[in-house]
Amino acid sequence: MRLFLLLTSVFFVFTSTAQQGNWTAQIHRPDGNNIVFTFDWKTENGKPVWYIKNAAEKIKVQNITAAGDSLIIQMPVFESQFRVVVAKSMISGVWIKRGAVKTQVLPFNATPGNNRFASGGNPAKNISGRWAVTFGEGAEAESSVAEFVQKGNLLSGTFLNASGDYRYLEGIVTKDSLLLSGFDGGHAFLFKAVIKDDNTISDGKFYSGGSGKENWTAVKNADAKLATESVAMFVKAGQEKLNFTFKNLEGKPLSINDDRFKNKVVIIQIMGSWCPNCMDETAFLSEYYNKNKQRGVEVIALAYEYTTDWQRSLNSLKKFQQRFNVQYPILNTEVTVGDSLKTEKTLPQVTNIKSFPSSIILDKKGKIRKLDTEFNGPATGVHYAEYKKEFEQTVNNLLKEN
Image (cartoon, rainbow, N blue to C red; front, side, top):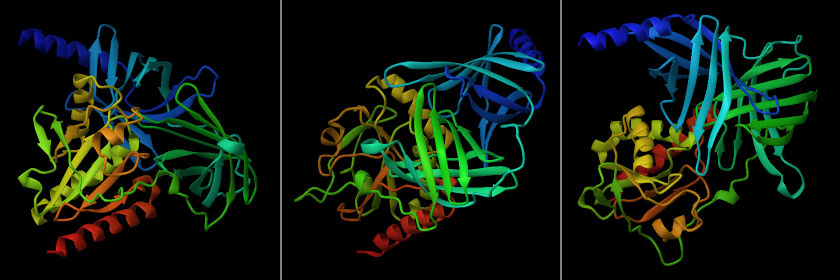
């Protein structure tokens, strides 16, 4: 007990040398286009806590531990952490993110303050509204939709594409330029562009992680539509019911044919612990399930992880389970997201899984009634509200059936 108290005291003194309050952080890319975000450092119950901020989102990070002269800040979701050395007016170290094949390590530093981007002058335009966006060029070009809210020079918004939204982005409009960024432990994004006129954004650059880079342009269009045909999923001819058995996080097999799912409306969540949009869907489904399970609703998550390493997958999936108080079963398919035969190996009754998250809704007879590949998260505002309304209406209608 004496040793524990001593170590706790040393840890508190060590972490308290840093200035409490707002910090501006940078993840340093080799090309100099650093990904910027802000966080609030607090002490709660005698322990350090970070609140990473992206527009309306605050991500609470409380798994902060001492390791020699360093701190390890473990993100609450994803295989993502910071290893840093703390001084009163400087935090420096690295951001480490594990991937399917390699681990990404990038320099990181933070200084006191709350200025995500420094303004170079008053904004020349207000770009609030809906925009038709093109990422890439030529045959590789992909259509997207952006929605921005600008108040003075402050800018927030997100991009929606066929496979999901880019979650919460925050930045500024300065003179004729825009800057947006977001960091959630999985995504690390920076957007730059020139506002050419009231209806045109040009010379856009999108930076992702340590090396991703893509050009983008946009045209203002209140009626811009998002094409989702490329990620659509269908029931194969002659099929109407799923048939699978996978292990839950306790290592016990669970089947869609088990008695607990009979005469229930069942939502099959297709997800992975590496997927930021899956984080948002899990938050929604967990809350929905806890409120509606007594009505005859069940949810099963099928996880497709980076590798077939059971323990690695288990560690990541348990973080999801704990973070969002998931009471429904999460099953590890032990088939990787990168496996080109993942659908045939796990859900051969449907066409290829192309988007994470996706969901399959079964009626009380176990028949497939809806395949949904168009999840819109909370950063999309009204679209998230519309998604939830449509989802709830679908389940309610199925519950009414005999």
